Image (cartoon, rainbow, N blue to C red; front, side, top):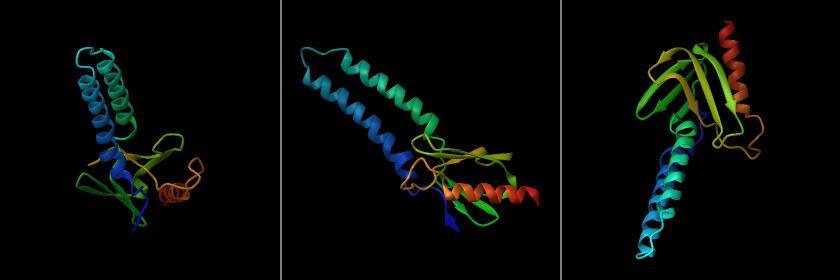
Length: 150
């Protein structure tokens, strides 16, 4: 088996949100302590807007990512939060690959809902040329097409 999802998914899913929201909370605390007699609403309003915007973006781009996707030949082994699922390539209906998002995303649409849902989304490994086609995703698309034909 080979790993076809990014090794940095843990950082993207778990570390970055803590740093983002923790930094905003720290900004509010420092702003409040620094302006003891002259507290401005902006010290609460701007971080609140940034937190809402960050949460919206992370909900759309980060929180739905699975932890790991392994290629096992005729199936993919998907791991997320302690749950492991084996998905035959013939059960994948469509593969969409978004190169212009950060992080880049691959979404597998499944024929039938599974334990992890009807769509599986993961981050492919990083490449030197980030907006170019991923050879891993291209290979997976070819193999899924071949599995559907048989």
